[in-house]
Structure formats: C-alpha cells, structure tokens
Length: 441
Image (cartoon, rainbow, N blue to C red; front, side, top):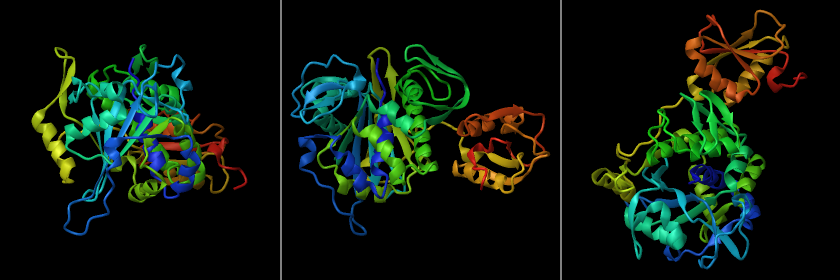
C-alpha cells in the first residue's frame, strides 16, 4: 500500500526553512539529517538576485516523500531492511532511500511572483526514464535513486533544480503531533478500512496517525475529487495547508523554542543534497518569512488516469502552458489548480460572552480566539455568571462554523439553538473552566 508523504515533506520543508533564526536549530539537527551526493546538482550554484531587467531568479526545490529502502550513501542498493519502517533511521554509513516515491512535488520561488508555487506530479504520471524506458514517476527512485529522479524531473520540465529534500516514514505522525495536530473539516465522513481511516463529517483535530491515514487514503471524497491521483493530491494539499496554518496561527513557525520540537520530529527522517546548508536555510527563511497557507499557489500537472494503460497521462497543451510559466517565471496560468473549497477561521464571526463573571475574561478569551485566526466581532457579559462549562451556541444552518471553532477549543461543546440574538455566526460563552485563562489575571 502506498504511503503518501507529501504532508511531512511540505510541512517539514516549511518548518526547516521558514524561520529567521533557523541557523542554530539547523546546526543542532544537522547531524541527524542525511546528506546525499547528487552529481546532477553538484555543478550547479544558485545565482545572485538578478539586476532590474534581467532574467528572473528561480529557486527550484524537489521535495519527495516515500517509503524507505536501505541504501548506501554511495547509492549501492542493499536488501530491503526487514524491520518496522518507523525504526529506519539514517547513520553515517547508510541512508534510507525510497523504493517508491509516493509524493513528488516541485517548490518554486520566483523573484517575479509574490507567492511560492508548489506543483505535484501524480504518482502514476507516465514519464520516460533514461536507461529504463517508460515508467511511473513514482517508480524512478526504486530504479536509480534520487539522482535519477532529479534527471527525470529536469528532462520532463525543462527546469534546473537547485535542491533536493526527501522525507520518509518515521517523520509524519511525529511531526503532526509536534505541531498539536491538524484541524480538518470534511463535508462527509471518510471511512477507508485499507488505511484504517474513520473520520466523521465536520471539523476536528487529527493526530499524527489519523492525519497519516487521511492523506494515504485513495477513497473517493466528493469534496476533493475522485479516487485517483488527483483526488489524493487535492486531499494532501488541503491537509498540508491546514498544518501550515497551525504553524503560523500558533506562532510555531517563527518561535525558535517552540519550533525545536517540530524540527526534532522531522530531522531524523530527512535527507537533503549536500548544498542545502544553514546559509541556504537562512536565505530561504528571508524569502519565506511571511509565508502562510493562503500565500501558496498549489498546482498539479494536468492530466487524466487511464485504466487501460495504468498511467496518468498529462494533457500535452495544458501541461506545457504550466511548465512554460515555471521555466520563465511568468504569472501562473489558470491550469492545474488543485486547492478545494474550504472553510477558514477568518470566515467565522465570533461573539464572546463572559459567563463566569471575572472582569476582563471575555477580552482575554477573545484574544485567544483571534490568535487562532477567527474574527471576533465583540465581547459582552452573558445573561448570568453561573455557566460552568464553556459552550458554543449556533443555529443549525451554521453548525460547520461552530465545529471549526470547537476544533481549536478542545472540550468545548457545540449547542444548536433557534437563534443567537447577536450579529455574529456563533456565540462563545466562557464558563468557570475559563478556557485556560488564569484566574489571577
């Protein structure tokens, strides 16, 4: 069963390169990060920012997530290790090299665009592999390792890659848990016995195991599309975006102390090319300092699945339009977009009421709610100060909005009422539990 690793790959990339004070943390983790000798990249150096009127500066990073096969650093394959994947870890002598790349994506930062672009390559995309003929892009690592994959991607796209980042099995669940889980909102339940997924409809916080199952599943979900590579890509990119929001909303991305556990969770499951050192990390951190989930342009190579051939075939004209924009740094064309419609905290208007009686409690809780990205439209006192357990009141037609807020406030109940009586989407009534606000404030 394929194990999609795009979540850990992307969030790991954000966690590793998105912090201004990254140098110290990177050096601390450096000994646990495997370094790969990639001849396809060694002769290439990133150019300085071009002067006005010159060609745009393009930074292209190939990010791969996959299952692992033990391979020497020199690239000589050994037998697949007979051990639980979670126990596989790099050392000075050996590095886990994926047998199958379930997630292959390109992260491009262009000096001519305001936001980074992430392009997913469908796992079953048909490509020509030098020396091996035709195969799926996800099989290339098993055929010749990361260096061959770099060459195939460059041949297919016409781009020059600058860096290679690879994340494998052990990092995903630990990384999600390190950032406090991810909030997902589903229009309908998703039950997939193959990947042990059982996620109800509505908004909830998923831990690492549940998030892993969700992005691995190939079940059809109307919200994200059919049970093929494109539906899975849309679901993965949604979960990635939610994880990125978690990083930024809770201050994880730019707080070195809180970020350490996040980096620790992924460092032991990470491999990069030799050129991706602390200096490059700082340069990317400067570029991506204000990055959030809504400032990323997510795409996939346009194509279609053929049951007759067993491949995803690219739409030639659409794929070329997309790749041409990547090669030139031009604005991204309206092809290959994958982001599904989604409910965001900023869409929810919240009235906060003090049901406990302490002065300033509603304002303190309102600040916490705003820190999670929700829109607080006002604060006031509740009808009485005898509320014991905090609750969210909402009318039936806006229940999904309340569920999204409740997912960020563990233990708070959602109560359906005929009317809330204020100009807001939901009313948060704070009780004696104070939602974690100290009583001596």
